[in-house]
Amino acid sequence: MKAHRLLHDHLLQWGARGSTRDRVALIADGKPYTFGRLLDAALRLAGVLHARGVQRGDRVAIYLENSWTAAFAIYGTLLAGGVFVLINPQTRAEKLEFILRDCSAQAVVTEQPLEPIFLDAIGRLEQPPAVLCAGQRAASRQAEPLESALATASAPAAPAPTIPLDLAAILYTSGSTATPKGVMQTHQSMLFTTGSLIEYLRLTADERILCVLPLSFDYGLYQLLMTVALGACLVLERSFAFPGQVMSRMRDEEASVFPGVPTIFATLLATHRRAPLSFPSVGRVTNTAAALPEEFVAGLREIFPNALIYKMYGLTECKRVSYLEPELIDAKPGSVGKPIPGTEAYVLSADGQPVSPGATGILYVRGPHVMAGYWNRPDLTAQMLKPGKLPGERVLCTHDLFRIDEEGFLYFVGRTDDIIKTRGEKVSPVEVENALHRIPGVREAAVVGVPDPHLGEAVRAYVVVDPSNHLTVHSIRAGSAKFLESYMVPTEVILCESLPRSPNGKVNRRDLLEQSHGTSAADVHESVAP
Image (tube, rainbow, N blue to C red):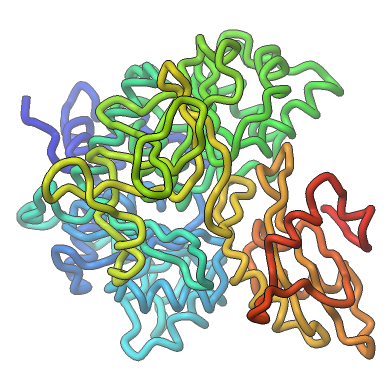
């Protein structure tokens, strides 16, 4: 059998074989799609992209909700030799413009409901990319109907000359500045990661993975990649916005794997307390993005009586770092386990020396899954990729604080940067502050993350307002929602007369965080939670 060297090789295998071509690969919006149809659509899109000027290494932005179109757009880009750039459909025009400009996108695949946003974004670009829009009924100067382009397209005459070291994806993630950073991953790194995940999750070709996580979130993306690698089936939902619909789908489709984050599990547990739930078909429940509260475990075992529960830790710069064997979830409470297969992780002090068991240090990661760097940002790349144990090697410095026990199990302690991880997403405090400052009447704003058992961290904003403006907590949240994705909108807003400052005049976030510990927002100032 031909070795799988490229990320799309598995699709070529399953979609071209007579015995597997008719196997269902994807169920989207309740409709099944086979591996053969997925491959045909991807090949047609590759032909369309070539005709629109996409060449090996060019970036193709995919700005879509979770859907059939998003799935074949990912593989169509790869088959064309391109690099896919997944963009959250909640992204506003300004950030969309930044990403398209930053990665020099040659083409964009999007859909009609997002038209006002993408037209605003591409209208500001000096060299607008080709835009293929699903659901567009008539061609326009700005966007070409995707369906009609596919109807007249054919597969490329020859495979793109891609090799494993070529980029497969750029995954944008929030940073300590207001602009997102593009994490570069190669075919080689993503193919390795996919195999490692499948190995430790003990997955087979019989899996039916139910995914409510956005494909623009690498946790969601790898559900698709694992499915195609296995020749399994992905039940793809647009989101978890309608839990009842998702639970019905889980039951009707007999899902065997359910990846989630604490906010999703909190909703399931709240529903379970009102009326008992049971999904006996599910054999794997996975959690990452934020720590799974220990008190959730007992309830999840009731809801998923036959499931292995996996606690995991990762970051976009290497996808996944560690996992805890489900059999050890009671024996190692609070641990995120050991490194995933084929990788190594270790904890060093601030001066680069190994720490003793139980001591706190900074986590470093070695492995083929470590990013190639940040797109166009050698300065930020140098902060994350450090000289390793071997000559010429670079390892990932996570800048996260960890401790390790005598048996080698890892425990997350905290972060050394200001990034807030909430609802499975990374949020830059600077970006939220910039949005708050755009609201008339806001004098100053400072944003921090505070522990939350369901969200991982809640986004808390301290705001100083002009007394002449009658701003309220509700109007501030509503105002910020005009400029921010929903998960970035402050969960809590605290109105105050001034912000604490350091001797150099900067806002002292440490003082705000210390003020936050052990005190709810409602006890301090007016606040609100959705």
